[in-house]
Structure formats: C-alpha cells, structure tokens
Image (tube, helix red, strand yellow):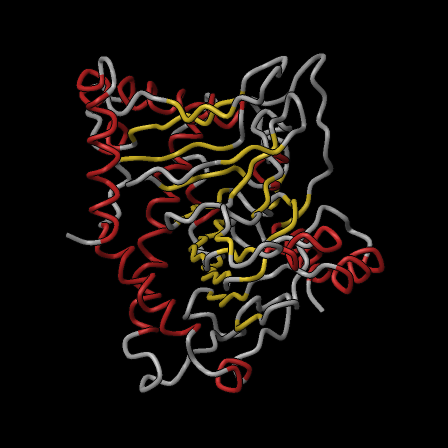
Length: 372
C-alpha cells in the first residue's frame, strides 16, 4: 500500500467512525473541514467535494449539482478539497519520490539549473531567493526578502514543447526518469484543470465549454517544493515564514500536501489565518487572481501562507520543525488570453471592477517583483 493509499484509507476509516459516516461516504464525502476561530463572528469552512460525481455524471443536471458545490466553495472560502479527482495515488507518490531525489542533489548541481527569467518561469530556486507577498512595490519586496526570505527551495517546470522557453532538467543519471515523470504529471494535472474549469463554467451559468479554448495552450507551472527542517527560532525571527502570505496568480492551484501540515488560509470574515489541515486522498484547490478578476470577485482569491508545523523540542530553549514536501500545479489561462469580466458576473448595480489584462502581462509582472 502506497503512502497516499494509506492516507486515503485513514480518511475513509475516520469518516466511517463518525455518526452517519457511512451515509456521508455514500453521498460523496459531503463533509467539511471546519476552520472556526474561537469567538469568530462567522465560521469558515473548506468543503470536501467528491469530484467523481461530476466526472461520471450522465446529465448536465447531475454535473450542475457538483458544479454548484465547487462554485459555492470558491465564493465563500476561495478553497476546496477535491476528492475522487481521478489522479492515481501511485502517480502522486512517484512525483514525491522524484522530487525528493532532485532536492537531495548537491547544491552545485542544482544551481546549474537556476531560474533566470520571469517570462520563462523555469528552473531551480534556492532557499532565500523568493519572497512571496501581496506587495507590488519592488523596493518593498527587496527589503522583505533581505529581512525574511521564504525558507524553501523549489523547482519550476513548464510545458516542455515551448519553442521559446525551455525547461531545465537534471541529468538522467542524477535523477532517473525525472523528466518523464514530471511531464506525465503535468499533462494529468492539465486534464483535471480542464474538468474543474468546466464545472466552474456551469456553476457561473456559462456553457460548460466556455473556458476550454482559453486554457488549452497549457500555459501552466508545475512547482516542486521542499521545506527543509529548521530551528523554530529562525523561522520566528523578523516574521520569517516558510512562505509568506500571498494569493496565487492564475485560475486555479492544485496543491498536493504531505502529512506534515503548515498551510494556513485567511478567514475572509475575520482576517485571521487558520490551518488547512491535510486530508488524505484529497487535493487542495484554490482560486487565483485571474479567476477572481474574470468573475468580478464572485470567486475569491484568498490569502494563504505556509508556517512552521508543530515542532520537536531539542533543548530547553530550542525546537526544530520537520521537513515538508508539497507539489503545486499553478493553472493559468493561455498566455495571450484576455481576462475581462465574465458576462454573468456583472450588471446593473454590480459594475466591472477590473480593466482587461492578458495572462502573460499579469503573471510576468507579479513574478518580476517576487524574485531577485
């Protein structure tokens, strides 16, 4: 049994043990992950949605029921957990395995593959080079990076057939089958993205195929993330985080978490950050800035961050946080797609909030300010 199969079995067993748990499983994991701060004026929950009901639906009416769940989740929280998504757990396990092998390479090997250009957005990003934030002021971001850089390293991978921008791959002898594994997973995630965007179209009263000719170029980014273990005192100094508070740039992010935890989501009602705990067998999916712009903020692009998970005490005055791995697939519209308010998301008394922008202009602008 693989790592993710064990986690999926644990989730199923836990739900069965609840009152009415078997009924919930039959109805497609109709449960929520409560994120409710003590004394909060309004509770905040991230729904767990069984996407297999959409994948295998036999009518538009059937699809619409799941589509409404998904759109309501993005309206309220900006985040959902997706279960029954169709991605084999063995594929996810294999990506984690190859990712760990890559990050275990010597620094001098990884540094030869260094990220160079925001238009490409490909390559290795060493610890301290990135500082994600909501600021768009380069000087402010530079000051934040100098004071408290994000404590993580990443590997950025794009579509492999791009004639202008090329992926940077390790030698086959260093990580066997790395390229093959990542490109297979890239395509798998794109296929899921197409399906979820179809459900969002239905939930927004558009034709199910509305987005398909706007996302087919696969202008996406597969990001492998490694958060090394670190002394807790270092993370707490100057507000340093594993990844600072930010929203994502594109349409959707598919996030595959390990069991360590650390992801926190901002409650849009209280502005407090609360944990988004890993749930076995699920993918965390959140709406990005361009989807929020497209929908006139009907769908939320919610702030989130990665903080230190529970630490292990190593002395009377010091603790150490465990290492963490995650995989993020940043889904984007086509590079030249014009992001302009959807026809069902504005009208009298609900004017358009944003000017039109192309995907490339928006994302390159954000990336240019984020990296050194």
